[in-house]
Image (cartoon, rainbow, N blue to C red; front, side):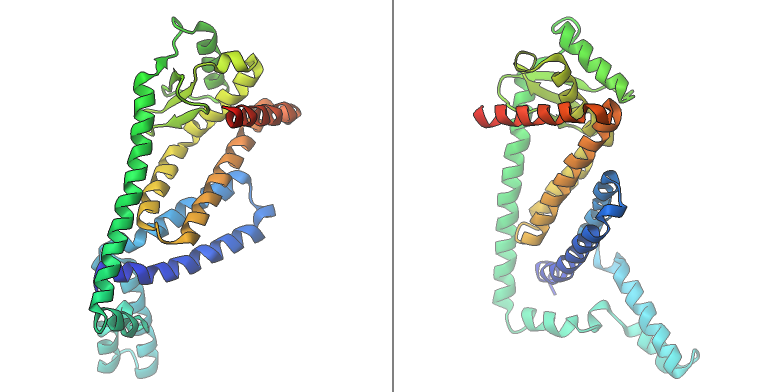
Length: 288
């Protein structure tokens, strides 16, 4: 069975796993912190990467073999040649998947080949959109103006104060650009934040503090790492709407966890001011 067909079959199980995850997460919502709800997406992303592990190295093969060996020994005895042969000959696809996959790759070879080409074309298209976004951010960063204590002393001072509030010790670069309407935080090893050039004109000092704390919290949580993994996996799962919906929920959880962390820093008594700042900023984005 070629990989595109095996990957398509794996998507059936992955979709079921994702659906169960979303249901369980909804049921346990009141028992988990916002940060924990977001962090739970990490193991799920690892599960989405399992189909790309080399087949002979993947863990399901060993697990299914041990299960078959256990039941064979229970039926025939631990020293039986029948039980040993049953455990040795077992493959993961013996549990009902082999007949289905053989039907696809055997009598419908052309269908399997067509799916392979469609899947590859979809991946190339999704990868192209991602690269356009990445190069767009790179172009804005290249044309942006570094915010330093010499160029923008007041804004740079607020930025450093926010880093002190969040106890961020590694270096985070700040750039201003006239080509964006919303701040962008990116980079895992070398985190950078890109803000609109007129940010200090449209917002008060306290509002700028809230915005910078929000973006710096993303850097502190290393959200770009999880987001980058999701973007790459989305290229391979471009055809699965449930995976796209799951990633949308993950990004919502990321923002909710970030807002909650900021509120923990500024104090819940300033939560209303923080919320008004977000609404004000959203209004500027719609008009911009």
